[in-house]
Length: 521
Ligand code: NAD
Image (cartoon, rainbow, N blue to C red):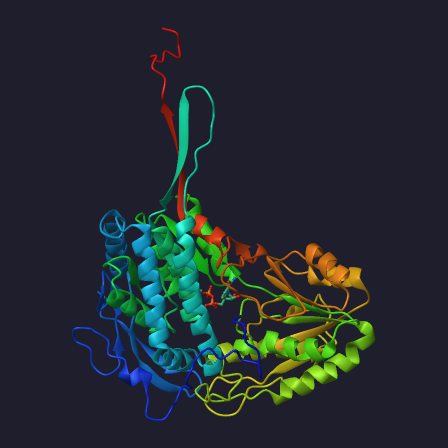
């Protein structure tokens, strides 16, 4: 997802994260009135608060299985309170904040995230189990994203069209109002940054629900936002269970717009909840993205990059290139070279700067991933690397390569969301495009070829929101990120994203000195 690769991370931090002597989770001091130990509240109306129910969830460090503090679980009363605070903000101080000041605040938040990057990186790595080298790149991406929307919000403007006669018309862009934003556990900080920055740039107030397993970095960002001067209610964080708290947030009559990132199944349910009240909705959903390798590609680039494209974040990325389609003439060579790289990935302690792949989010998810692999083998796939959990208490799974896969198999159709790649042979360009499009998703595709004309032909023919050619990276501020087909609708990261948080109002004015009498009465 960020622009880094194993062995070629663009380290934008001047100093390395030092593990010894620092414990971000212990240093984190929540402002709950009765906090004991490492307890984390909700963030509502500019302060950290206890949930109305007093309910807390035990957090576990997925890489070690050890406890990682306790976090508040929001219920319906907390959502009501957060939506009320957001409404007051958008109709009060936040709604009156001019664009230049919103821009300054977004830059100030970017500065604060950068200044606190060590603490945030450790918090995120421990909470998600993700390699800290990856998290560092994601934090840098989040900072850039806030800066991008701080800059482009100056482009928000209506226009005046000459319609003729005595009419003077113009359009206004107005914030949609209160935005509910729901994000998953795989990139808690980055997904929150992707969601918060355009909404706040547009002038909306936000109630954001992280996954209850991974609220820590998002809560810290909300605190930083309060410290740099965002008024109370502009940003509210209600970590809670999806089917109850999340659904209540989506249905809430005080919410004007819903932006969701998560699985296609949940996205479908949220779309249903939004249909009756006709809520504005954007959905960033799952993927089963292809990585096409033609025989004329530079394999020294294509193979290690393809390895990164699936194992980054242990395959728990929406745009993970989990289907590698390889021209049949080089299939055997490709599979053996790819598997050799997969076996060399440094899997382990997320806080070790040398680690390239951390754990999965939980042992339950690891078992789910393994179930896919077992069923794939039963369907005829061959395990060429990995294929089993890692050792120890942590939720580790070995980088896995499945060969002899056919497009119709479950492992080639369903989002496994783990470090498992399926390698599928194709005969020619037409066959490659057919297989690439043979899934219900359409998020990303990467094409490796030495023929520029073919690259453009294939990019046009693939049904996905984004296509990369001869490079593995996927997300850059300014480049629209989003899906075709069941990968959702709406775009993140780009100037178009602002429009998803704005209403357009047409104003028609008479400049005629004569009275109107349309019925001729
Ligand atoms: P999920 O759909 O289970 O959960 C996502 C979020 O929705 C969580 O906060 C969860 O609590 C909440 N939720 C669950 N049920 C809900 C309901 N009924 N009403 C309201 N909220 C509800 O997804 P996940 O397993 O946490 O995340 C992984 C999925 O996210 C994958 O499918 C991945 O591809 C997708 N994803 C997509 C993008 C993208 O940009 N397209 C980015 C990251 C992740």
